[in-house]
Length: 264
Image (spheres, one colour):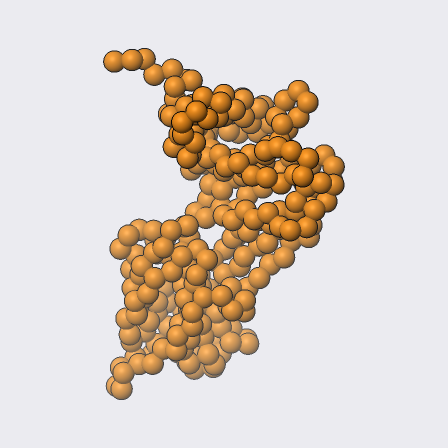
């Protein structure tokens, strides 16, 4: 059996990123250079490298009108990724080495139309919890990207996703609901309830894909959270009004779920 060298391993990893044919060897060399530079710039990478392959996925991006390309590196290591967000770095070729021009974390990276100092602005999105999305816009200052003030959007108020009204069958106070969500497509279940009633929620996540519930109350109510790692959740409602159960995926792929609601 042929010995698996670092060069061969890098070449195989790059082909997995979508580079094939005559470009494979060149891209393998580029990946080796980027890995060495990333280890210098972000020493924590050394503690997060997998046993085989690279600790990042590489994507060629064209942010500059002055040539390029630049590379977006997205961590593939669990210790540098949360349930949704992963560490990301953008490198450009400098006169003597690869230069780190942006370090961020999120689940979505989008170049924008506007330019500053010859480089496109970029937008990243991240989640600190199931109900809020943080949007950061980065502008190039001639040397590196710097962040503009963060913008937060409430997933309930933003209008994204689907909303359903919960109606119990006559004579009952509980219901089972089924749905499917992704990190960019939430579902909301709204239900009227009275002060001092007890609401019980549970979520079945058969694919273990990571489901989060957030209970959003009416004015005077509270925000309460439950994840699919918990079996049941119970809360005495503090106010009369309409409550919303926000269902979201904590990972990038789609997730199916069964939600049980009981109010009495």
